[in-house]
Image 1 (cartoon, rainbow, N blue to C red):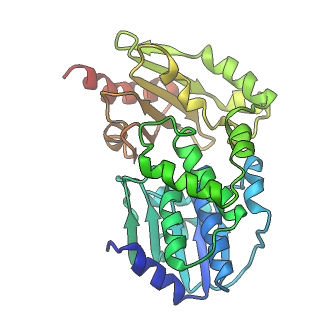
Image 2 (cartoon, rainbow, N blue to C red):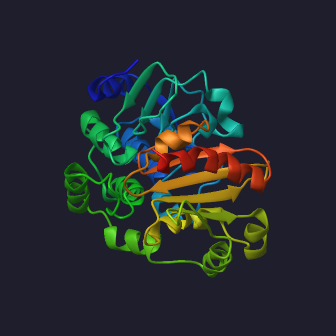
Amino acid sequence: MTEDLQKIAAKLKQKNRILIITHQNPDGDTLGSGMGLYYALRKLGKRANVICSDPFPKKFSYLFQEFEEDEFEPDCIVTVDIASPQLLGTYLEHFQDQIDICIDHHRSNTMEADAVYIDSKAAATCEIIYQLVLELGAEISPLMANCLYTGISTDTGCFKFSNTTAETHRIAAELFERGCAYEQINRGLFDTKSKSRIVVEKEVLETMEFYCEHRVAMIVITQEMIRNSQIDTADLDGVAAIPRQIEGVEVGVTMRERLEGGYKVSLRTCQFVDAAAVCAKLGGGGHIRAAGCVVDGPLEQAKKALLDVIVPCFEQ
């Protein structure tokens, strides 16, 4: 059922051992949300822990400065920024039927929980967590501000994406006043690339193909590229933006080969195509301008499956 934030806060206040789950292949929003809520709960004297199916990326290590892993039998399980059970990941999928509270901003959310709070107008789940922290009555420290700003900044492309709202800027301003190290965060996340990332970008550009009179651009990241470059997979964040940056491209498609087979697809659109609607037809979801899904099969088969859904968008 859908709850309001006051009721979500009330539920959390009644619990003492709270487990926070972030999604697999963790990004800035799920980690910022999870860690922001973690620090707020600790300030209220609660025991809390944050877990993920995958390792926490090194580039977000600044979020964990005061994190202390705590093992306990939870009396409340919270998911943050998780839009579907599949995003729990292989190692945490057993929690699927045990979730007490789901907090998210994806309109395509299919999670089941005792209490659900979804605000699809929020640019990032961290916007929701900011409001929740205020409802909890926890003082926002500079470290908490860093966590929440990270999610907002990454999910808005440093405030460039169309999901950015006036409220997004108002919350960011509040976080600035709470001591957020926004300059260092933005430089690390948006203006710094590893050598491995540059190598992968060079190889990825060579895979680019165009369709629908150059209105669709597609790139592929293979496991061989990842192995040869020895790149930390977290360094691949942002690669999905490359195809959409090309003049005249309406739909940018990034296909990343999975170890278990098939391809993880990231779709980015500019104005006329609903990325979430396209990905929903392939079992995925997300936002109007940014969405994802998984497509099975070898590369050419996976490409065909994608194009069979994308091409009709230009024939209407």
